[in-house]
Structure formats: C-alpha cells, structure tokens
Amino acid sequence: MCVSTAVRVARNTVLTLGMAALAVPAMAQVVPDEQDVPSAGLDLPANLQIFGKADPNIRKPTAIVNDTVITGTDVDQRVNLIVSFNKLQLDPADRDRLRLQILRQLIDETLQIQAAAAEKITVSKDEIDRSFNSVARNLQKTPEEMRSWMRQIGSSERSIRRQIEGELAWSRLIRRRIDVSVGQAEIDAIIKRIVDARGTPEYHVYEIFLYATQDRAQEVQASEQRMIQQLRQGTPFEYLARANSEASTRSVGGDLGWIRLPMLQSPVLEATIGQMRAGQIAGPIELASGYSIIYLADTRQVLTSDPRDAKLSLKQLSITFPAGTTEAQATDRAAEFAKATSAMQGCGDADRVAASIGATVVNNDSKRLRDMEQLEETMSKMQIGQVTPPFGSIDQGVRVLVLCGRDDPQEKGEPSREVIEDGIVEERTNKRAQRMLRDLRRDALVEYR
Image 1 (cartoon, rainbow, N blue to C red):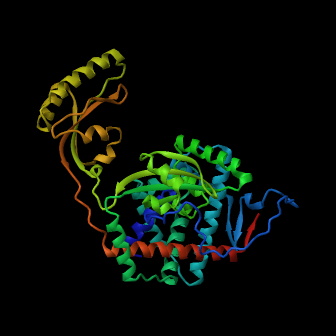
Image 2: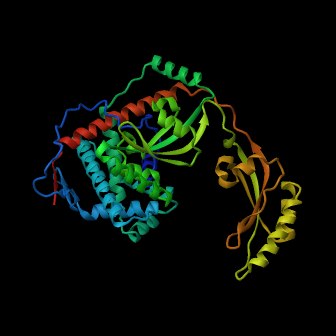
Image 3: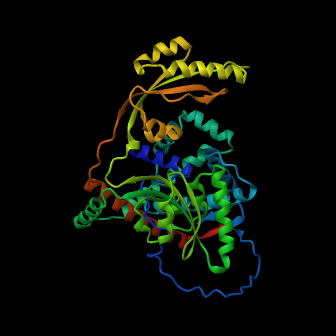
C-alpha cells in the first residue's frame, strides 16, 4: 500500500470515529433511496400478536458471524472510543442504542473482511501499522501516546486496527468488483447545469429522516424532539444521523452535500431551509412519509466567490490578569488597554503599544473571515489598520485584533471535467458498494449468544 493510501485510510478512520460526514457528498434526498431495492408487500396484520419473547436476542453482547466471534469486549471498546472521541454525555438508554449501532458496524466490518478474504485479498501488518500511525498523527499524538490514551478510556489499539483492516480490505474488493464509466455527454450536461445556475444560492444541508405512519406520527415527533434537545446539548449531528436516520444519507452522517433547493422537490423543505441561517437546526418538519430534522451548515452562491473566504492577516494584542484580581481592578486595567489600543496607528504600531502596556503580541496571516465566529460581522466591516473593540474575560484575559491585510477570494471558474467525473464515479461506486454489503448481510449466518 502506498503512503497516500495509508493517509487516506487514516483520515477516513478519524472521520468515522468522529461520526463525521465522508469527503464525498451524498445525493440530495430527504427520503431513503430505495430505487435499487425490489419491494414486496409484507402483509403485516393491523393487530399483530407476538409469539415468544418480545425482546430480540440482538441485545446480547456476543455475535458469531460466519464463524467469526464478536465479543462484548469488542463492542464496549469501540463504544468507549466513540464516546471519548466525541465527548458524548449519554444516558443509559442512549448508550444501549449506541452499543447496538456499534454491533451492527462490527458485523458489517466482519462481513467485509470475510468477503475480501474469499477473493484472496489480505491486508498486511505493515499496512495497518502505517495507517495506525497516521491516525495518531492526525490526533496530534505519537503511536505510543495513542495506545496509552485508548487504554485510559477503556478501548484498545486492536479496535482501531480492526477498523483499518476492514476499510482497506473493503476498498480493494470494491476496486476489483466495481467498474464505473462516465460518458462525456453526461459530464457536458452537468457542466451546463452548473454554469446555468451561476449566482444562485446553494445550501450545505444535513438531515435526519424518520418514517412515520399516521398511527406513529406522535411517537416519531417526540423522538425527533429528544434528538433536537441532544443537539442543543452538544451531541454531534452526524452521530445522531448515523444512529437514527432512515434515509440513505445515514451512512455519511446525514450529509446531503451542497444542494440547490429545487433539488429537494419539497415545497415545505424549500421554504424552511430558505429562511434558515447557517448553523441553525429546524424540525421536526412534517413530510409526506415522515418527519425530518434539518441542519444548515453553510450557504454559498454557485460559481461565485464568497467574501467570507477572504484570508486575513491579523495581529492580536492581549493582557491577562493575575490570580486574585478583583472585577474593579480588571475593569480599570481593561479600560487602560482599550484606550491604548484604540489610539494605535495600524499594525506597524502594535509592538510599541503592546510594550507600553505590558501586552503580548501574536501574528496570524492565514485566518479566514468565515472562521472568526462571533467577530465575523465586525471584521467584515473593518479597514486595514483598524482595531476591534476589546473582548474576553477576567479568567481568559482581554484582547483585541488588528487587521493588517485582507486577500479577497478569486472568482470561481467552472469545475474541471476530472472533478465532475470523479464525483460521479464515487457516487455510483458507493451505491454499488451498498448493494454488495446488503447482499452479504442477506447471506450471512449470524448467531447471538
């Protein structure tokens, strides 16, 4: 395996641990994509009676998948890794749901490794070592620090190495079995649609969709209300989407990618998203077949540069307060700091002013305007040499930012044919890979003990 492949697998492993969306966006949709799945009526009775145990044995901690054992320890170690990586605060019911989700993932990993082995595809120890080391570097740890951290949180190196092996083996099997070709006329049509849409708004949207029949509507709404509360408490959207969503975007954390509203083919969603601001969550939204929670990550205009992508050159002046400083003392010191910095004559004067009031200076020449969070609006209106109002607290100190320079983004051109072709290939490959995995699940012998 080449170094670039190891890095790519390591990145995907970190994203999976973080429950984040994969690099390739999903097709825009707000209902599960089942066009490739043959359907047949199940003829479920209106008043069904369950014979035997109502609680399925899938809750048991150990599974045997085609003679490969998945133990309760395997599940717990992966759960601990996910919980610690995402800093999740889970009540017992949510933790049980996560354990079931992880068990399903481990079963899929096992099936993928077995399918690859059946075609004599193996992953060497050296390849897994390189990917593991890359994961550690991505988390700003040495390999030994990574192993120590995982032991501390109740996980193990084996848990990540198993995931890496599954990703490598499955990707090789996909490359062997799946060959996608894209016609030049199809690429031409996509480029024309993009060019024709120049200047129209695009929205980066995430979704959680749940089916709801009329008799389950209240139950599904209550479930989504609980999810919204979890989101407000800091639970990552991608985690909840992977754990709960019934749309095909579940596998990528609910990520619809960049879409234009007409692609949704839903007046309700078009109206809702069109009124949202980036960072907002809306829901439960009633649709024809269920309810959705929508998260708007960002907005932009097609083939138009975004002023928020401007790169800023900044100087930060800051002061801190010694332990025991009273609020009155801090207020006086902050007022002195504000007076001195407001009279500053641009970045060239920053070091002199900082020395005169005992402040420290930090330079940053690559900060994007969109990354300024609460200061974005203030910074967008500033001219070169101007200073922000002081901000901070007694605990963290007070600081100001001086705008030294601003490089506005260049106007965007139409995407290259290679980028479009790669996107189509990736999308179709993912769909076929999902069908492959679905077939493996249907043929698997799984025993729970």
